[in-house]
Length: 457
Image 1 (cartoon, rainbow, N blue to C red):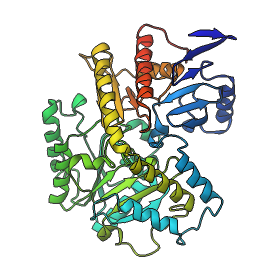
Image 2 (image 1 turned 120 degrees about the vertical axis):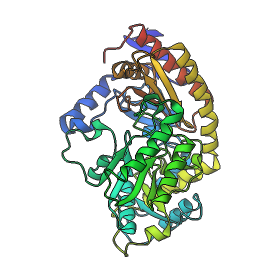
Image 3 (image 1 turned 120 degrees about the horizontal axis):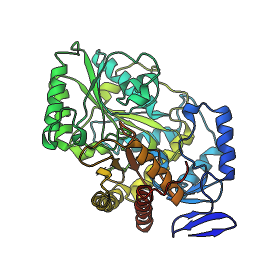
Image 4 (image 1 turned 90 degrees about the vertical axis):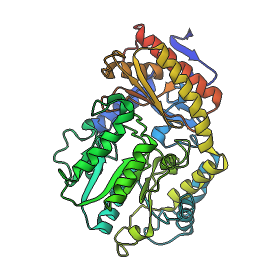
């Protein structure tokens, strides 16, 4: 660490900090955003991107960061992958939209996606955003069953539109937005570290499944169309359910003629160590929602499901202005090809094991870490005031995140029900040495914060 021209210099083999963020150029852009963009949509970190490649982000002031965000789980194949960039550039010079008229890319992408799934899931609807996919899945479920109620989980995140916000189970996502959508029943998600039922780890699942049975005779009118759940709680703090629990939910749905919708928006396309998160649990959903990692940043989403469900509605009732547009299709096809050809799910599983080992070392080293959870190459570190009391410590979590950014590690703001979980999710193509360097920076950030060496943020 040296001083050059009054600027702070910190450099590793994979990161370089020439000025404390936000630097002067970043400050100008941040201020311009504040002048015109609602504060509810402004960035919560001082990082202003200029360009990004692989697992490296370069900001407008020349700082280079190791990326532990993947652009919020979008850039699974890394930023600006040459094959994806080439596909986008080639298609952009031809045509960009055909509304609901057919084009060969839409047909080919539909086939490519369906071929990733078991043969029972043989239809795909192409859309634009994760929220749109969730809404479409709910629409399919209600239309097919003739029922209206949906079971969702505490701590879940399904989007920010009115319906998807209402489906979610995180207070701060819904607070201040008026009455929520009706016919949604929320149940606890098994979160052993903070079990709703104050039960030991091995009993939290069973109590949650019993609660779901009870709700049929209490809050429900007997009109349940579907259960919607994430393969792991993403924004809820990277809480990974057990195989027993997810299989129990599938059995619950089968017993009561209820559809199961898996929200794979944050889990899909290799992130968890398998192509799709539900594959960890030995179950088959009825509908699956996809987005984020499907297309490397070009807005694309999809619903995959059984033809008996998705062919139920008449022609023309599920069209979308931008859904399946050729640019999105080109990006998605190239992205999927990279994921398959480079065996990125397997790579995520292997690197994820190393990441989990390093996190266990951090748990042993720092008593402010109550628990570290992971599945594949996505992890959550629960920051607490004391390991004995388990009281969430969102202030320290945010300080660590900001310190990490100042050191050259790009992370998102803390998430979770209490805002105290550091969520770490590097691109699946990250070099092993870069992963280790990023984890070293995280370790350093925690140490600096605990020793009072905070940046003014």
